[in-house]
Length: 305
Image: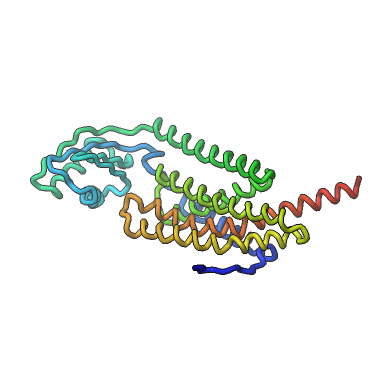
């Protein structure tokens, strides 16, 4: 069963329109960052307060989450193990004692009759935050370098490798803008989601580039633009179907997965949409544009010689 049959869209002819749309999205991201005053970093990158709370009778994590929200603490993360819940929150309190009293009174009010004990409370310093920031930077750097090297060797062209990474950066920057727009905090979960978007995007791009390379060998009497158009049109239905399935899963996680996975699912929804656009409409057109400009420079140099 085929949902989409072969399309016949002139992607190369309309490439400047696609570049314009990408430019608008990137400018919107810059505007959002300026308007919002930059991203809001979570506890992973700014440090905060760590508290370990134990209960005599086990409580639901969602009930505990609602209790903390009702107490006025908005930025926090939770982990649970048996009857112990670990809470991390931003340093928005004058002292640990003030934070401890607020949490304990709210929890005792919410769970009467259940013995509550604060086993541990301490500051999470900036040293750990700086280490995590550094590691996140390394994660992106090595991921991009690895992708450039792989695509360069796979398709025997550094230009194609750079074009694929430009497409990934395009996706990540736009996802980042929508993240800031939704007032989401930047934490380790966000970094994992952005790297997942990068991996998904490069997969679509490699499939497209592989079809272009295959057609370059099979079709020898057609122009480069015709071959790229044909290749993209052949891959386009596959990209739509696979992306639609991932989009459905991401939407399911967003609406049904709970608050813990909410941000990850949100980034995946945006990333799938932007990833299809960059892979199909931008990357192939970018390769064509660069190859044509390189060819013109080569011909001009040969004429001068």
